Length: 204
Image (tube, rainbow, N blue to C red; front, side):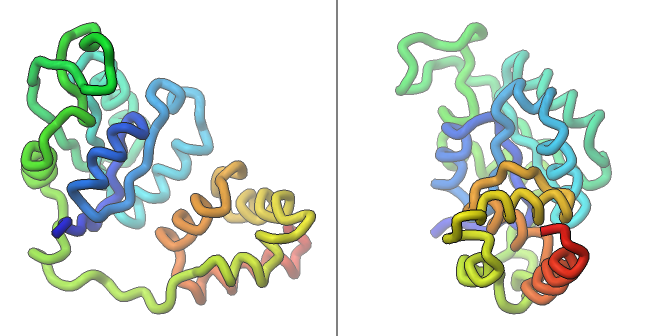
């Protein structure tokens, strides 16, 4: 049984996310490696997640991983971010033909027990151990997005972009990513109220 982690976990890429999602039930956000350096929208999104949920940064133990980690340390509120470190283990991930430049395994190559230990050491909040998860009422659903004309219509993509801009969220989130982000940041009541205001003011 996977353990639930309350904080949002930030990793470098999708293979890291895949490995971690086998171990814990958590919201996992990928940075796209060095692409995050030039992605102001994603950085603003991470700041909001840090303030509301708390973040755990889990990058590879090589030089590139530490460049990304140090960048995030300077860009995000330190009191809302925990740093999780994997050990230096030499080897090669199965999908790669050759080891990385430094010959170390990344997050995707770590055993589940090692990833769990890294999260424990950084002070991750495991729901089962620290009491029941916070109840936030009914979640925002795909039906809500459809009812607001944000999916399923000819101008849905434009309406999504307009609403995301009004909510100070990345404008190019896919419908599924948008739904995940909204549920992280708002209760259903809060979201519907904000969407109504945005409609009334002509923002979407």
